[in-house]
Length: 509
Image (cartoon, rainbow, N blue to C red; front, side, top):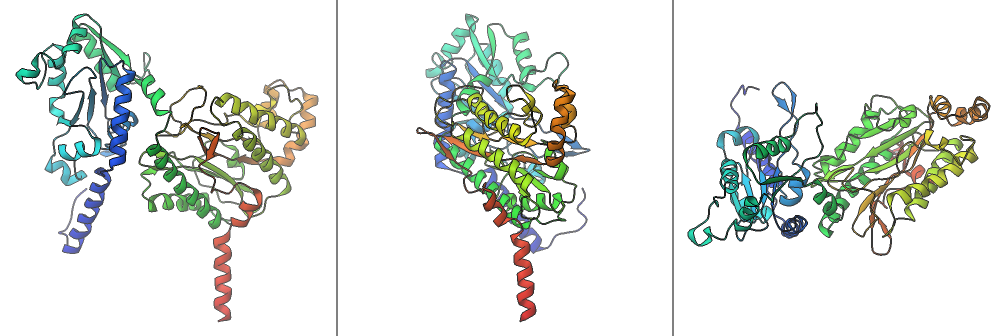
C-alpha cells in the first residue's frame, strides 16, 4: 500500500478518532474483569497443585494472501487469564514463588509498528487491565527461562535470593519440575508442530529435571463453569444475535438473496461492537437448509421455501449460537409446519432435562425419543427402535458455549454455571433414500418411505437456543428469540410490509 497524497486536518482528526477507538478496544479497564482474572489465575495455580510453571503463548499471525494476514485473535486460554488482546505476549505462572508468581511478558512499544498497526499497550496499561503486577519486556523471556531452569533466580535482590524460586529449583534438582503448556491439538508424525510442542522439545533437549505436562485439562475443567462476569458477556453476545435474527426475519421476502440477509445480520453485529462473528454465518434457503454447515450464501430465496439462519455474535471473545428456521414468504406450509413443530417439541422435551446432575447424553436421548416418534408418524422412518432416524438427525443435540462456540467440556454431569446449546433438527435431502438404504433398510421398506420423502423434500429445520444451567434447573438465555410458529409468521417480512404501507399512505397524501 502507498500513500499518494498529504492528508487534510479533517482527515487527520478522523484518523485520530479511529486510533482512539482502537486504543479503547485494546485497553479497556474493567474492575469486575480484573477481579475475575485474578480468581481464574488462582484457580489455575491450584489445579497445578500449587507447584511447577505454566507458560502460555500468544497465537501467531496467519498469512491470508501475499503480505495480508488474517485478523489476529488472542489464544483463548491466554485471554481467559489476562483479558489482553494484543499479540506477542506470554504469561508465566509459578505458584511456589513469593513475589513473581504471575509474570506477563509484553512487547516493547514501537513507534514504527504503531504507525502501521496502531497503539501497543504500555506495561502500566497491561497491568491495570490484567491485574498482573509483574509486566516485563518480551525480550527478557528466554533469558528468564534460561536463568530459572539453570537454578539462577531472576530479578531477585539479596533478601529474596534464597527464597524466590526456591521450591521450583528444588523440584528441578529432584527431576520433578513440571512445566505446563497447551499441548493440544496433537500434531502426530506429519501435522504442523505448534510453538508449544517446539518449546517443549527444546526444554527436554537442553534441561534435565523437566517434566512437560499438558495444561489443556486444567482449562477444560475451569472454563466449563462460567462466572457471573462471563455470563454477562455471553448474554450480551446472545442479545446481539437475537437482534440480528429479528432484523433478518423482518427483512426477508421471496427473491431476497442469502447474502443480503447475511449482510443484515453482520451489520447488526458490527453496529453493537461485536468483535466478530463466533463462526461464519449460515444463511441457507431451500435445499441449502439441509446442508449442516452451508456457508456460501449465494442462492436467491424462493416463495414457499424455508430459510435456516444459524448465527452467533462474539462479544469480548464470548460466543453466542442461535438458529431459527423461517418461511421465506411469512407462512409455513402444512408440511413445513409439521416438521417444524416436531423439532420444537423435541427441543422443549430436551431442555426440560437441563438441570444439575443431568448430562448432554441424556438431553440428546430425550430429543431422539421425540424425533423418532415424530419421524415414524410422518412416514419418514419405518422402525423406531433402530438408527434410521440418523438419516434425518445426524448431529448431536448440543454443545458447551463460551470462549469457543464449541467450548471446552466433555460428557460430564451438568453443574450450575455451565452454558450449552440445545439444537435438534430434521433435514430431508435428495440423498435421504440412498442413505436409508446404506443403513440396511430393505427395498420394500424404502418404497413405504418414498412418498413421505417426496412430500417433505428439501425441508431443513433446526432450532437452537443457548441455555444456562442454574441451581434449580435452567435459564433460557435466548428466550427473546421467537420460536413458536405464530410468533415467527408475525415477524417475517415486516420491513417489506411497512415499506409498502408507507408508499401507499404517501400516495394518498
